[in-house]
Image 1 (cartoon, rainbow, N blue to C red):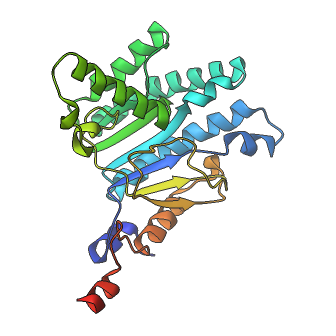
Image 2: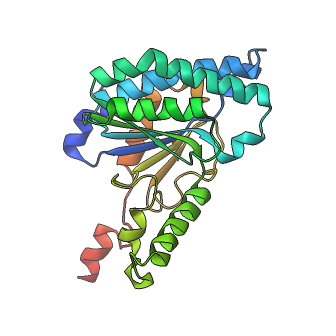
Length: 251
């Protein structure tokens, strides 16, 4: 069986993959277990996917872990999710660091408790000089919120006289986003069968290819990742232009 790494030699290969990790609750319910059981299984999938993505040549991986809308979930579930995140960081941070993984946290820090802020700072500070692989965790993240925060930050700079409104273009606006300095995602994957983007990377994913799979996140395997990449490789990415064949006909 060929791997996407070998396919990369012959064709396009995604450098930045973003994943909406969905289906933990349904996975647990299907086994007669509480939702936290599914979240625990989902953490194991995170480890597996991060390792495999770096092995096959992906340079950047962004995972949607907790959205601004997730605060409406029961407090017990939110508390359990935060505990799992702390455990993942405690168990895996040094391993990620040794492997040269840089971790960035995307999302708003407003309203987070001091212990959570300290943990997020520790993750980023520990790995800030790494460059082998980039792992972004979208935490307390919403695409609309990100765009609003960026717009306010630019407006503040205009009010302070640092910039003029005429200075604003796409490249300048990008510097105010949580993802500044990153290449846009080539491929966005959503697990669990849902076919929506749920306020994820609204600006950045404008020309990403989307792959929706029925596989629930805890069951998402290395083979599922390879299958999504192979779908990506069969797409005709035009970025608003004509397909290559049509371009030749016009010429």
